[in-house]
Image (cartoon, rainbow, N blue to C red; front, side):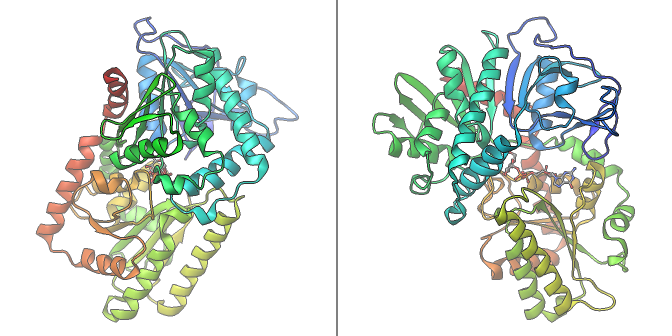
Length: 506
Ligand code: GDG
């Protein structure tokens, strides 16, 4: 039995049947996807050391945007997904590292790459999240590059490349995902000169002057330029990628307008290819939600008055997401507009993330401090100004919470896209809801209808919250309609098709 990560159930014995053919028996449309996170993971249930019986495992399906977009494609085309074996029972249930998924249907193969703890520390917590993540979000002061980070990043990319070479058939496209896997394409290209290689970089690409801060930046770029196409959420990131190639490699020929980089006789196309969401699913879940029950469930006794409006933020506790500026904006609003006190509650749905990295544990502590400060300054017996929850919600509850919220604040300093900005408007099935959106999130380039703000401008965020709460019905509905139309435009299979069209144009 398979379930989402939110509510895992005991799995039946897992069969390991590699599936590399598409439904019609050909491999033409089939695909190799490569990512750090796996779409399905297996954990032991009970004491696996004393009784390592395969049937005592639980399988969970990832629920992120990446899996929602790519799992259906692999289910219909067949192929292999190569990913880090992050689950405790992953390798025990696999056969030579391979397992057929989804567990109840087995439509494609999941090839797992086991990594040691120190490899994960250096590659994931290290180079990926302490060098590339702050670099690409243009927060260079947070870059920290211990020597082991690069050693492990290289070694792990090598491991992924070996697995890819092992599973890829001659006519299969390979599609790498995200900043964890910048070097692997070059290694695969060396072993398979004729392979068709794609990459999608889910986070922003910085300006060349910022990229110059990157230790081993030339190698990172060289790895990506082994691909035939590299996708980004926005045209700006694709253009910056080309400009960075131009600045880094004097021997490259770069055409920023057409997004083509030629180097060593190979051509790479940088494409703007915004990822959308599964909008109908969000709409359906929100429509089925009992919003009063969701408010009671998430807020408990923090919300004695069921009619009080909610303003909502949903994200990982990441310093790029602008959570502290948002609290400063609320403080400014309640300070300068005392009549706004007691009229709404701000709910911060925050997920703990990357906590072994000091910048993240410090950020989480600062968020908790800010919540306490606001409670002390403005809270009354009848009103909690801010409710912070770190609970992971199941998708139905999250959709219900979106629907229950009158305003959503999505104010990252920078963000590749930001899928919450897509999910919130379509969950507002009652026609009520205002999105306040950072003009520096990728979503701001594709969505129309939000109130946009500079995420560092505390006063502007305060003003936008005030305006959002006071918008008249006509404007609110008109903005929401425009938002939903633009979210719907990007929803569906278009993302995959657009990526491969780019290669065909090349
Ligand atoms: C990276 C890029 C880019 C959150 N809390 C819960 C929950 N979520 C879901 C949301 C949303 C997803 O997590 C977060 O996606 P974002 O896009 O907002 O942000 P990142 O995690 O930083 O993602 C980003 C993305 O990749 C895709 O390319 O947009 O820019 O940084 O879908 O709904 N889901 C559930 N419970 C929660 O408590 N079920």
